[in-house]
Image (cartoon, rainbow, N blue to C red; front, side):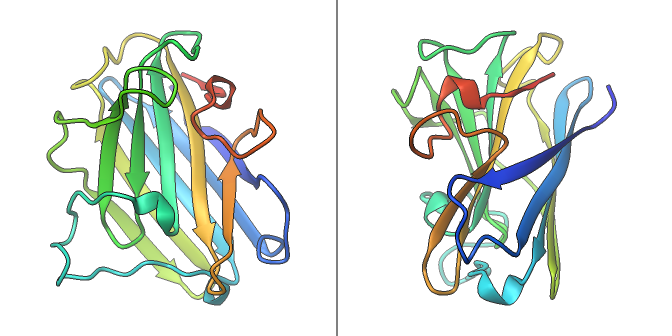
Length: 187
């Protein structure tokens, strides 16, 4: 399957989001999903987390990554996704930290997904571009031959502390990456 391109949009446009663009691609292979996220713009205005070896080693599982600049994707099996269906949340920090959660249904039963003991990815930065690339083996949690629904999102925090919430679509009256209609990419 060829890669699918996506563009993330902020939930609410603001001064801190007007000079940013978040694009990327996702591709499905026999047993994995591969993502490339590209954040372009004035990165000096973005609070990009850095690796803190005093807290944990590089490429370590860490909680609450969504409280800082973080790239995310949500995965559900099947052609449709409803509030009653299980799904997974993947959090990827530019600092190299990660986490994967399984949810029993809409925002319920959150637990760390034990089938992932590591989730290696790469981050490249320049003054105006941050690129994160990952290939995740999903065969541990879903049958990769079945159709999948994806939600792709990011939390961007400015150096002034302003949070912005980015997604392919924002289906509700507030930013909600877990909303079933945000799983807008079909693979």
